[in-house]
Image 1 (cartoon, rainbow over the protein chains, first blue to last red):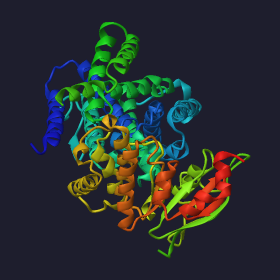
Image 2: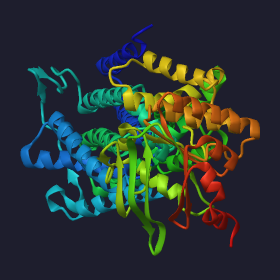
Image 3: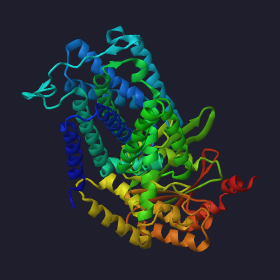
Length: 322
Length: 241
């Protein structure tokens, strides 16, 4: 079938939407579903540079945090709607990716990873001291009452398309996740993806074979950063309270890296499988065992996969098909 | 064979206090088979790194087809028509053999071509190299001679006017050396200018119209293979006083 992927995306969106239309469902499912969809988007965005290009970004939390705080600043300054917040966050995080990329992409391997880690820490320190967005004590963002889009009342217990904000944001996040996967897949199957693969295999040889390596890396960092920023922009509306410690949490960086590695970095399916699997396990662990244990699970799984299945779940799966 | 294709004029390269190339001046003519020899550490690879743009020379000019290459990045020089191979083959190891060739084909002359056309073109290059049966194999399964041929095939796919072959024959058997030589002769006949860096004297002397010899970053001799073999400075550079 020719449009298998496109039809799959539409079906997943419809399922997500229809779930919100079933009355009486436990709101926690949407809360957890949001977290999983957010990780699908983040892991996919990370994989564009990390999986295809081989550049390990430890600064995921930095890009997410910039998205989060762009949204907060716009909300505080102009009362911007969530869509406006997302667009602005995507632009700013993309711009950040472009400029950080310009300065750090000449660094290879572990040096690049350290530079991106430093980025997250610098940004966190900056926000900690920025009182307009709440500084270190955090910011509480109360979603606009009765938001509308093109005349449709979106959130209202009686007359709205969605009964509550959690359901609305779950659908928005699902859309962002689908968009991220769509973009990643298009890159993977296109010239950009092939060039990034050549860079990952041998950057000097790629350059000598006519691949404009710096330009491709900058494009990848910009797209990857922008998608992370958009995911981050929805975060304050979802939690209604954000502080720098949460927004720039290293847990994002670790998850963004571990999920594609466990799922398989060479295909768009890898981060999706990794994020759905790990995200679900983590959400279950948070509820049934403890909220801190999920990092332990992640660590153990990462070690197991790096040793036993270096190409991730998809690698194991695709080798079997050969 | 009269027009100058590559003009190397007083090229100097320093690494800190160490002068790897000192005012090297020579030129390569259109269609020429040009040999570059010298003992280990004499600056051969540094010189071709400067030509291919991996290193930028600190002094002097490198002019290719009338265009000064100063400041151009390697991929821009590849587009301009200079392609090099690496001493130790550097295949794109997560790709198949044919995908390796598709990278230069797509990035240099692929505008407006479909993936099918590019794959066909890659296949025809593999056929001329006698590697068509390996097209869909992973590069990790290739033998040494196959890796060398892939390195050359990938460079050919970039459609160079000037091919710089950095020790394409190191570690090959006598028969394999002849096989690679035949390939290079064939591409030269089709009009490609070739610079050959080689330690296997039999090969470089048989191949080249003209040979230069570097020693400690200096050009010490230039001439036909016969002249170079008899040159006292070359003898001293290789065997000591």
